[in-house]
Figure 1 (cartoon, rainbow, N blue to C red):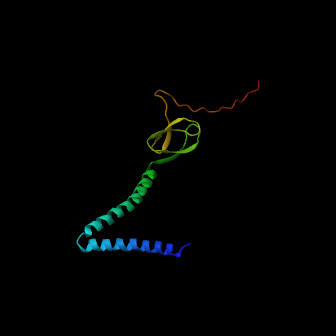
Figure 2: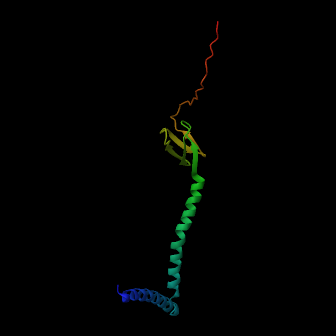
Figure 3: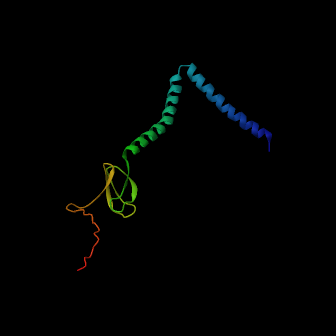
Length: 124
């Protein structure tokens, strides 16, 4: 390998930073510091916007994510509040409302829960 090659890479990298520093100093000294300040403000906004967006999304998700059991098969899943979804286990259409899963049924449908009754035979 050529040792001059590595020196040229190091020098060219140093030249870039020195040139950038000289341009910023020159703009600041001739009264165009507002350009530099504007550039730094734009860079700051670009860096802080994703952090604020992530924090806002986490806050929204904490308020709207509901974890509950399906009223039909008791499979626990998650859904977004005030939306409709299907149970991943039994495919029952559900509505997520006020922190709970509710079955979506047509109007006039009566929901009945069956109770198992054991039969006891009496001897005559």
